[in-house]
Picture 1: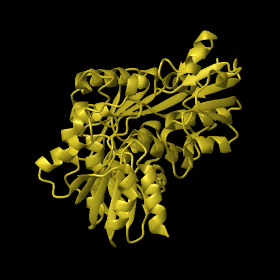
Picture 2: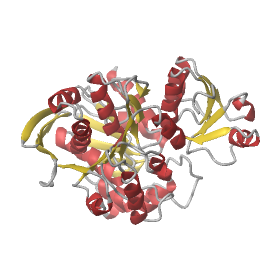
Picture 3: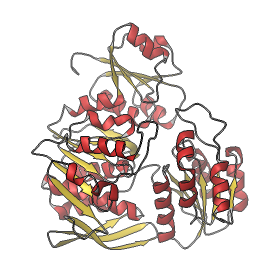
Length: 455
């Protein structure tokens, strides 16, 4: 199919997943165009590659395109999507297109889980690239060492982030499947935790008999589905002693993490340039993939030591006396983990500036968000980022603020986005850490603050 069409148009091309597909197809010499509702760094990066992008949606944008790819954020009544349907064009969702790209390779490594997908996928891709295995990679974040979220390789392995949103991961039939963890998420797609678990079970069982499924046994929700996975398994963890791959002697300081990996009674040293216990789990998952592939583990660990991280994942914007960090965390577990990463690495006052993502998620998890933020010394909550949802005036950030006050946090307040930068400037003293957190546009303020404190 891919070679019978030449002109491809992406609706919502600026999204992190869509931009990776666009870049990969452009590198494959397809004529790629796209549209998005607003400009963004992803749009600018694609334009620099020669991809024609229109800001705003119009039925004329699809022009003479033969294949239309649309983002999950695109509504059914989008004018370009409706025009494509009326023209009876070939139309694929983002998830469907990724499954088509996977067919170009002999083997697919798919990284799934509620948290850590982007970093783990980036780690695997970086290791394989470092070891000259030249993989094709599509990841939901810009890998710093690659300055891209997609890589077209000449090797026979496709490394891809497998997203559970809209059950997108079920479009894939990976040779190796990783499930990092399972926590209830995407309440608009799943009726309850059991429904989410069923999707991960189906994903794991899509692996062929000659493939393998790698799972973290420290996740209770993964442990609860193990018996329903009927494919070969490899396990990893930190707390659980009965695993195939284990991390021990974890040490963290100033954003660096060292630990030992134990496999078959052999000890391998890892030095990570990223902080957080959660990144040890991500590294274990990446090493498990290498073990399954038969890669020399010493070489894999050495390559992992050179991993420099992913943009918007504990992304340090200023290292001067005032430290500015940005992170994509948007689930209570993720928020708790990134705050712990700061506390485990630095003995400094931490101010968290949290932008809730989605009205539905805030409504479901506001009490959990409140608990997850309690370790921060000072907390600013800003407006909810609606993203694909319509504004719901009955749900506000004040829910989290009020809950934290009930829990007796001494320094929590609502701060409008327009006041964030001035507020931080007025509060900042030497040796402070300010952490912007959220999946929306909160990163813009960390960028501005990073430039200010770096001057």
